[in-house]
Length: 249
Length: 249
DNA sequence: CAGTGGTCTAGACCACAGG
DNA sequence: CTGTGGTCTAGACCACTGG
Image 1 (cartoon, helix red, strand yellow):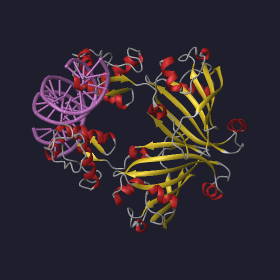
Image 2 (cartoon, chains in turn red, blue, yellow, cyan; image 1 turned 90 degrees about the vertical axis):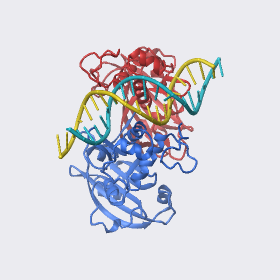
Image 3 (tube, protein in one colour; image 1 turned 180 degrees about the vertical axis):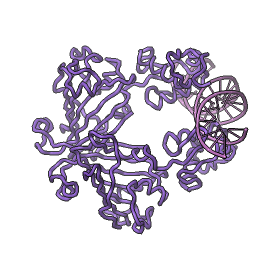
């Protein structure tokens, strides 16, 4: 009966014939994007959702478990199902791959160097999927660990989704949580392209190293829950005492 | 009844009280390691496994689906469940993160520079989890894409698990498939530590670049299905036309 | 205690592959 | 046609949380 059962209440608009549990996944995600449930809030129980959607509890369960694996939701036995928040230690490191060579992972503090509104260059516009010269926010930061300046970030945000950011009294260290709470933009996926470069004079100065030292360089494209590109950033990191950590499985 | 049902035939030895589906996962994995089913072979159907293990079909299904997500198995509707093989395009790229900047992903050909048996240095021994001076294989390779030498690899293997490798007539390009078919070592997870370095004289010569150019450098520790460290490698890659690609989600 | 998610089962029916 | 996995349902019982 997959995809052909119209006894449910999920609004199978258009021609997409998906299994019910996939429809539930999409529907729940959409409701989160529309803020029916805000980050940290509890969803109704499986049985309530099942009756609301007109499917069985097992089908709802399968969808919620998939979304939990995708870190869109958190589930706790005895407590309930909650919209995932970009807070708490695991979430903070989820998208932060840089580690000091001989230390435990630690989040560096950050220092805003500048925050300006600019017109998107051709490259930035293409990355963000917007038109050239559209307004973008450019945030430059420097991050420090154990008193050592270790990395520099140029962060581009589409102004449309982050309108008013220039009026924020303070830009917190944990940007992705900030995006989520202040602009309803939940970071869902990132794609990093890593290269090795020679430090420019300016970067070397800001990092207190000699020009000519090698740096880990990477560009990152960030997608939100609704699959929009919401951030493009270029990071340079000292490579003497730090590395970029990746696990494949 | 989770973990307390001894009506099953899974041999809950020791004190591990795991949910049945977890026990099935472990059991199936173990049977694959022991080569009851070889890579590419078909497993019995869900119902057959269920009756063999003394659990219900739904429980087997849950376990097999988890193992499929972990890429230990492949399932095809109408066909059956198969032990995953490190062959076929997706599997080849699963652990190969290097991409030419403006091209589609492509696997570079490889050229063996040397294959020697050595005594593990302190560092290599520690990485592989063996004693210093244990016998290890050292395989040096150079890989080429579009006629351009792009990367160098120093690959260390514990000789115990790869005994006889020095007598192999040829070392294929696709090493992980080779490990699997010839030594029953299935690569399951890798951990890469990426840095930026300046090319040494030797590396520059082998890569046909100038000494002093920046290189993407990374060390990789590889774990097998049974969670042993089976490979440690150090890779250097030209950074001018290539990058290391990572997706987080 | 009541309410939540977690585990396990049993069974119906669909979709797909191959002979 | 048969056999496989995929979807969906219904229901029992367990384990955890908070009041």
